[in-house]
Length: 139
Length: 139
Image (tube, rainbow over all chains, first blue to last red; front, side, top):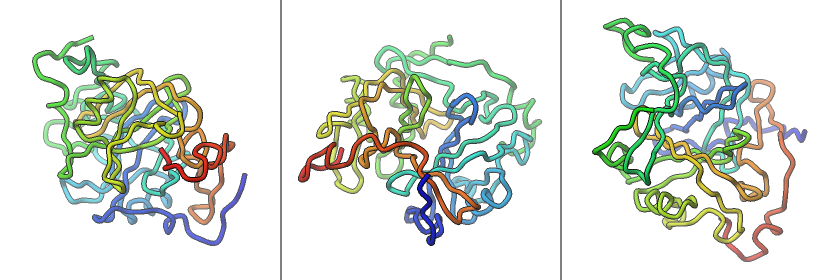
């Protein structure tokens, strides 16, 4: 509706002191929030360039494409950023399970009884072994 | 479906070195992602206890209830957490605009043309002056 030209959107973003920004990933048809992961500028540029989500793994200190070993890639439909420029919201078409535990969404557990217990709210689509085999890394 | 008793869900969460965890807030009826903010354990406990979202402001180093000055509170309908225990997804009933700029969602800007420009994707419900008056803080 209102174009904001002249400044790259990358320059409007606030990466944290580690050079990272959180990216919320949402199923573009159902609205289900699938996962949250971190991007650095290079992984965001790669995401824009290829149309597939790429992230930065803080635990493995490694650049990775979602689905690179499982085949469960995410095709980008829209990239939004928030008023403070410090969080991304990415709409995707998700193949299969987004979660490395085989659930469609990583947020498959909800709290019950004021935090005293929780429940699993969706079916497991695959086991991790089905997704990755025994020796593959889980992406 | 599957209860996981015996351990408080707080103990299943991984707060970062600053004692914080990101909380994605989603409209429970439309699925629109409204905002992302940070909670410490005390603000999460207060959220569970009161049924209204409370956060920790990193910039102001202050505990705050969403809507405490604007009246745009969030009533909690569900709290989920992800497979790694390091992100929360909270379903809410949002009164008015979630964004301090007067938009329903903080994610009102989407990227166009490979990052060269962006567009505003939803109407502004109120101006910040209408929400807060001139001298109030923006929550």
